Image 1 (tube, rainbow, N blue to C red):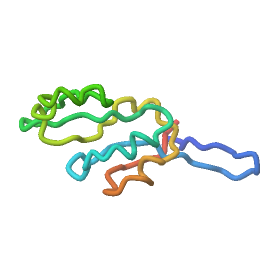
Image 2: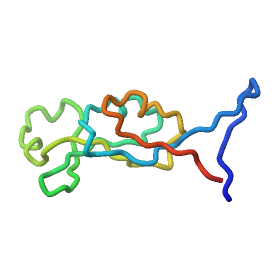
Image 3: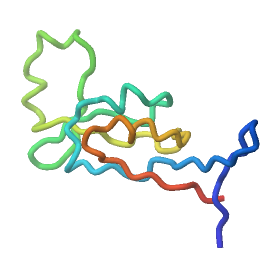
Image 4: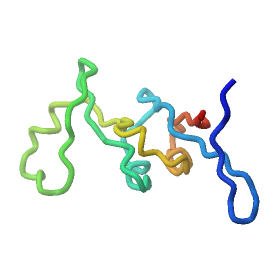
Length: 108
């Protein structure tokens, strides 16, 4: 049997953080809200082409004059790029309009 990771807060209350476990890309609309709110750089926005492969999405307005990039992918979706950086705050899940995230307590 494994123990669950927990933190004792200054007031004595026990907090059990739940870490990002998975993301349902079928439901994801690629809005980027979770990406913007994540304080740790856990997530990455990518394009998904017709074959189901990931395509790098260039960020920023500097690519406005290059419209060919949008033709490389069918839609944008979020991916969990650095799961190990998650601190268990669940901010991504709270802001997601499509409820794409699954979180779980960490085992020690």
